[in-house]
Image 1 (spheres, rainbow, N blue to C red):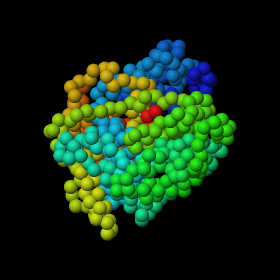
Image 2 (image 1 turned 120 degrees about the vertical axis):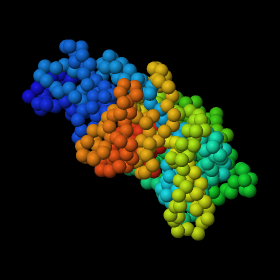
Image 3 (image 1 turned 135 degrees about the vertical axis):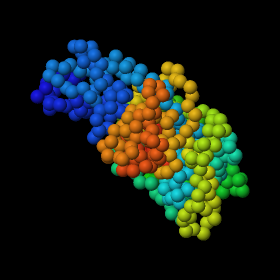
Image 4 (image 1 turned 30 degrees about the horizontal axis):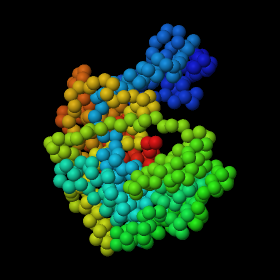
Length: 501
């Protein structure tokens, strides 16, 4: 059996083992974009390169077989530099939105396009989960949020913006009155956090931390939580809405100590808790285990600030130090010309008659109609995109290499499966997977050099080309260039990850 060194550690592998598998068996993560278990190595992305020390060669680990005497470096300086170069060359030609403009603008990071799809499909309970995960107080924000997400909506430049605020308000109201849902918390972590201030910022922080299993106590000097929003005129903002959502925070197990003014009492709280969040001004300076979450005049930004600080505190409690996250890679189409807007509308607008769920509430039916206008300009793999993951980790820059002419917006396919050529990195996985399923038509590389594209041969439809292999092609695609029109990966639906700190 071949014996070799990997990062100066001697290992023995089965004959025929690739370097990629040898390294992964050691628990070392290797970046790949064109490798998929069950199909032949494509050798198209070259992201998985490793260095053979004796020869100095950079080898594609997915197709290089481990042989006796090799000395392999998996993450030395020149290896990482080569991977970054590969990523920057790849993203120079990658055209697409990582985030829908509305979701990117939302200070609380709500997944707005997923909410739209769920409402249109009549999945109101699922939509309630999505809006609560994102906004914490979706009913309250349905009244007091200035809706910054509506301003960049692409639909606005075509006719009128989507009524995003009204939609999450309607969904949240239904959930509170007909099917209130208590979001489950993981097992108790054994950590406790004291939060000074019971405004939206402090309560949003408590909500995130309770969902991470940490015990939370909010210290509020007033008799009720809610801060300045509790003092708005009743005709502008009904207080029963805020009361209902504060009650949800309490049901999660968050403790409230009202009438508690923290003056010289800070040291006592620091000794009592594993971390402190100051969610009101002029109470404590951040440092040590004291963190600051700034209140804000915009309610949705106040919620976002609380969520972001809670993410830092959760990281601190789990590792005793809040490691900074790398800057998240972001690709954007930018402003689309009207012809491309028309293409987007034709491809994504849901105008066909829908199966309306049984309900006496006309506003829910109206909500489905409104949600059908969404252009769905988000990426279906916003969370699990391989290109985004590795570009973020290696700090790849979008504009390092000047790409060719800007590609216009385009979607191929009118059925359930769609292909966005601008997002395709020509890894070839979909071609190989279609071959594996012995598709009668399949996919093929068309053209040569920079003009090469993935297409269905002989002008057949995408659904005809991928009759048996569509699901695996969608799962394997590293950029969501191939996706299902009205579905996204499961991480997209059930996480508020990618909170940028």
